[in-house]
Image (tube, rainbow, N blue to C red; front, side):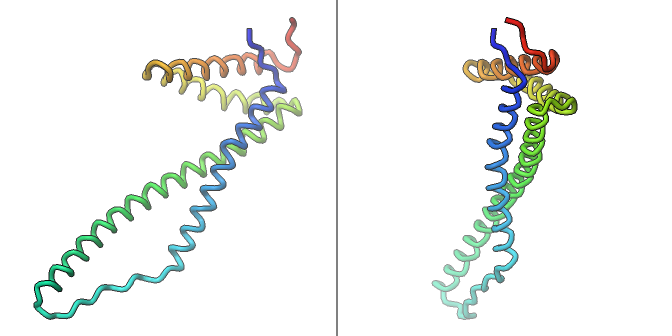
Length: 166
């Protein structure tokens, strides 16, 4: 049987904090640079066609208006997705900080760290079990592995800091 110990669990939480935190910080830095660039950028200049009723100029004016409308729709969709990803990155950063402190607390044998680790592992296990019921084939095996590892980690937390007997 696979045995998960508290030091191994501590290392897993610390590694998970880095795996979640580094991309979150990177994306948030990119988001801040984008917001600063958007804030400092000036308004675009409007295209000014003469009031000449020339047919070619009217076609060019309609084309630029249509391309501008498509561009504004794409820009609004991009900005919405970018904002949603920024919110997800903030949540990832909070989770990374929580995992970091939990890993450090587990290695220091703090009682609060066991509660914090349980509070992180139980929802992860429940979500993986729900996903296990709704997917198929290889994804089902992955979700089963995640749920099993969460169960073993919770078992290690429940047993406590005593070394397992062989």
